[in-house]
Image 1 (cartoon, rainbow, N blue to C red):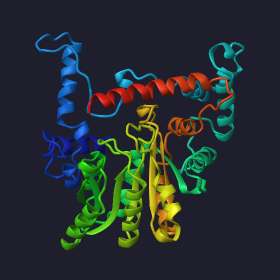
Image 2 (spheres, one colour; image 1 turned 30 degrees about the horizontal axis):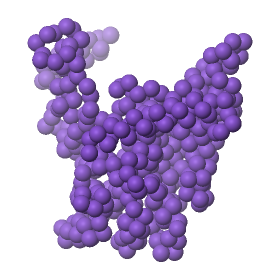
Image 3 (tube, rainbow, N blue to C red; image 1 turned 180 degrees about the horizontal axis):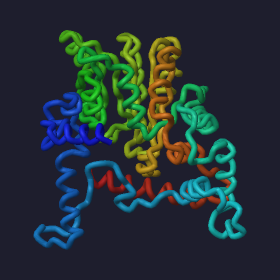
Length: 394
């Protein structure tokens, strides 16, 4: 006890007693250098206004704050898909399936789907999973990719992640060794990339989308950006393509995608394809995945490493708070993929609700099932509403 009293006495005499051991001058400068506009100073002020309004403060010249800083559909009253929420509820509390009144509360196909999923999760939704995600749910993602693209997909090349953001973070952490490493980013862009590159100590290499040509990624501009970075001693490691575009909304033409893949083959850089808006199509050009185009090109781009991202946060789901998503790695060196697996293992696994929601996104009700009509109507109503609002802005 005397030793403890002496220790406490020494703490009271410490020069840090009235200050803070962590100060802005001695924390990681990379954190200070990272700017994330969608959660920045304006948002902090908006939250302050919301609190003032909630307390009945009438000094402000408005009575409501609408958050438009980030894609967060359900905060703006977009309704969740009923079937998905029913399945998730049953997986969260499986004893509901034993309730004699369960069929009055849940559709038969949601009960069947929940039972199917629970068989794939031996420990239930409250247990850790494999660090890459539950194998059976990764198989569902692989099946979805095969149906979409017409080419094989390997569940062992798929990582289920806490939204696409965490997958992007892992890839950037894998690629960036220091300030001499660059990542090509489209302008305009989603600020996840600029913030993450700064956080990991890399260099952002901007290339500018061609507004006059449907916001395409012109090969001339890619070469200009790449060569300029190279002249400054920067080794470009990755190229980020956001398709459909965020915030620009365009879908790339296949001819443009072929040029981009050939550019990656020529330069030896990894392609990071952000495809989280693939169901939000507002123009004539349809969405085509980079995986499909790469496979179509075959030997022409045989050395290109591709990482593709998708998420439950966007599209018509809007399940941002579930933090669900996946990335598929294609033509990645096995030793490098093991390092990516190690990074995913640091956080043990992505959340299970997000993994389940991702599996539902890629394996929804099909024609002939009880929930198909309601699912299709809810989906089309949301997408039609989003498209109408998008057209009002242009």
